Image 1 (spheres, rainbow, N blue to C red):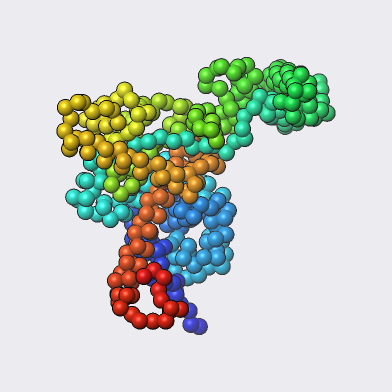
Image 2 (cartoon, rainbow, N blue to C red):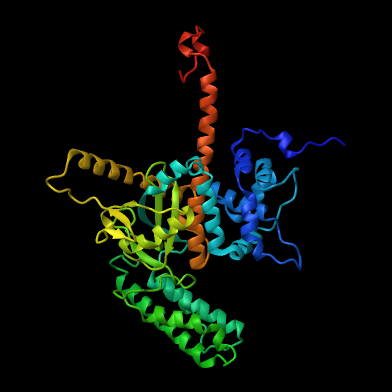
Length: 440
């Protein structure tokens, strides 16, 4: 029976084929081999799992969708190391989640490091030194996949959670409040209408009272054996019920208590609920050299040191200059790295100094569209991964996907430029109007 391998069938000029040939897959095997055991059921191939994670972020797909696309797309299969076309799924979508938890933050830093080292600038010592000599820093908010928090929503979720705990532990509550909560939630509709304000406020207070009553009842009735299981959840419920409008470090989500409120100050979106991410790019070329996710909402100036350490760890070179905006004020130098802010120059500044400063801050603005692509194209606009580790992983993989896409675009540009150079001058060709090349 005659059969062709994927390498013989696929287009060798396709960008995914070229990226598969360029990727140092052996580095992933060496870096992750200590996470696997020689006994027990063998795990999925490392190249398969790393390839699926890269394709998921590169194509902006979910875990379930990237597995479906893998079955249909031979280029996906070749990128993940298959030699022949397969009709069945390579793994269960949950295996991608298990692999993420297995390799952890350090494992994803390795993928980002490879995405940096694969760039043409990183392969030449002189250009690599220039690439890391000056970096551009900026911060952004990575939104978590939570609903907009309100007191009524949180109280209702606490009530439902308490009722669920009671069912699991076979506890009999004094009252279920099933019909009462439904009526109170209906009273919340159109709460800002002048005729409904008093009625809605009364329903809101009643929901708050019921939530507190159920939490206290569970604390009384739970056995000593069951209490440690629910102690942390009940502590979060108590914090939510006691927090006030002007409090700091408030809880905005019961299942993601680490979420913070980051003020944007923009008309379209005043607040974002998630985590703060610091991004470092090269001054020339817009290669993402480092990404750090921060818990809480630190001032921008307090994110510089950790971001520079991450850049130096991934690139193995010292950063001499960091170009930032006015949000990073109060810092001039950190560990030998000069922090350049758009401060007014002295009166005796030369024209060269003025021109250099103007050029630096025009280049600094180039990081804004990079962050925009990370958010809208590479899944950082809304983070669906769980916990603080999920915040870190999603931000790092968005940066790695941006770098891989940059490499693919350069390859595509080089191929198209080579083809155009082979064509004769269009102006010297006399052809009918219907056959004239529009690009000429």
